[in-house]
Length: 446
Image 1 (cartoon, one colour):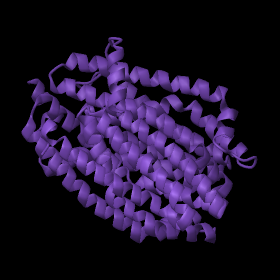
Image 2 (tube, helix red, strand yellow):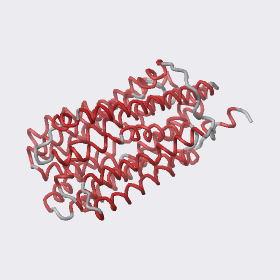
Image 3 (cartoon, rainbow, N blue to C red):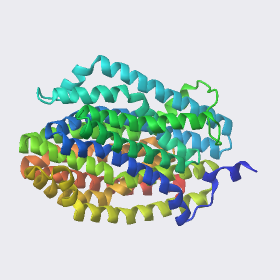
Image 4 (tube, rainbow, N blue to C red):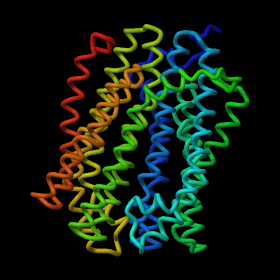
């Protein structure tokens, strides 16, 4: 059997087979989004609104951990997939092992630093005297599980690169189910409050991390662990390729902070609770875009690395067509289902429910534009153009949104808050179209 026959990325994909290949990653991300949002639902319904607000206060730290893991994962996946496409399988395995080891070490360093400076971090994030105990309980446990968080993010991407997206899906489903079950046990039955939510999430991190490590140790795929060459340039290349994902997460951390401050000023604690619901709902609904981009990126990298221009063009054309269709679906789901989503979180708090419902009416339009922006950023990462990818991610998650968030509420108050994200996505889409056209002759994807 030849190298090409052995590697699933070398398949001549059509629309159906490409979507089928990416489908496990999409479902995997949906389950990841589910067990991320489950914490907030259980906390909102079975603890109190202060606990819900506290999760949003410490959310920037979680964004940073996930951002570092995603940077290594997506950037490293592009490096590994390209070398596999070039036929350098042994070097790809060595690079893969080094990337995973680096992720584990970074996770352990985050745990040590986080626990050492825990109180200072919480105060720095703007916690009040009332919210501080909740934040401390939740963040302590999140720091303890930081290495597992890093590992599960790495494996989500690298399972696809190894041609095993279904395994990633199965593990994500198991992790999601475990988190829901343990949230119910710890929060509802054992009355552990916000600590229970953090422990349930941590167990969700552990499942794909441990099983994924065992799988790659057993050498049952073309991509598996080996003795790595300590090549710092591989890590630098991975980080530069995937820096857009770190930029995106860090930007989300900053804008979350700005959203909290703005809504606290305009509507008080109910406003913070409402924006928390919108932020977590946005993450959940964009998982379809992220999962599809994650699932197709290794195919793009492989065909780019192997010089198969015809298949590269076909793949990119299919991807943009699918993203356009799914964007309309997510937009309509959000617009028509916003009231139901608000009710899940705030059925017992009429004020929070009304604020959230009204926000969805405007916020939903962002989903028409964000899918293309997310995929385009992933496309440039897969093509090893970290600069273009980072530009898109930076502007959609920080640059434009920060400008609109600081300016619009001064004149439009709460309406300005809801408009900030849709306008940021729209302006980013204009830049994305320019970058796609500018680089088409370089990469030949059109």
